[in-house]
Amino acid sequence: MTANGRAVSDMVGFVLSFSLILLAVSAVYTGGFAAIAEEQQEEQIHNTERAMSVLAENFHDIERGNAPTRAGEFRLSGGALSLDRTARFTVSVGLDNGTFAETVRTGSLSYTKDETEISYENGAVLRTNDDYGFVSRPPSVTCRDGKSIISLVEIDPRGNVTSTSVDGSVLVTVAKQDSDIYYPRRENGTVVNEADMAQNVTIRVEESRHEKAWERWFAERDGWKQTAAGYRCEADTVFVRTTKVTVRILP
Image (cartoon, rainbow, N blue to C red):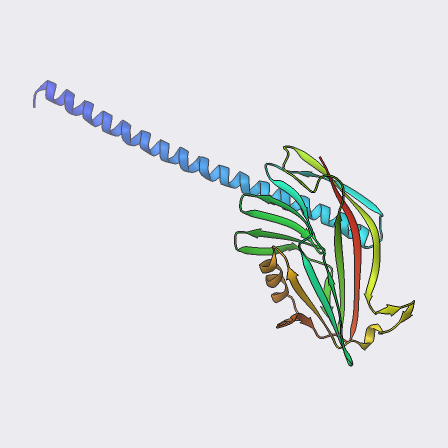
């Protein structure tokens, strides 16, 4: 091979090697950048979920009577926060002589971004991605040792803003309106059904955008059995209470 031939061969080899290096660096850069972006997005969703759990604790403080009002800052991070009156739950207490049932439109406070929705609904924080959902903070619902306590939280949206997607943060205020005992049932101040007259209690999710998350949660809880009427707890002592709160979103 002549000197010129060797030079051309070396040049071709160099170009091919350099091209392969560029392709490898480009692939690593592109894949790495996508992985970093995905990790950042997931971390942002986790932060939002934690922020919703903090708001849930504010609701719980009011529910327990520890405070009449609470407020918390919520960072939107490119998503939208909204108040919705769609969610409904029915609680039925089985008695010797029939059933006492009450349906409550609990509503929800929801954060949505892309395919993810995180909500405070009836005492719980729920997260749904596409068709998969789970409860990240449980509701105030118990079933153990023949006793069941169910606490419902009804959201009453107030103010001029019930949905916002502005950049930055918003303030969410929660104030107690009233609370009531659905069971034991009273009429004119007199107890009609004592707490220990119950045979069972059933919760039915009438409407919720997180229905699969609720199904998953009840299925994983001891004491609750799925029936055609809903999720039943065999209990001879039952307490059902509701707390109604006013919620405002302040940009």
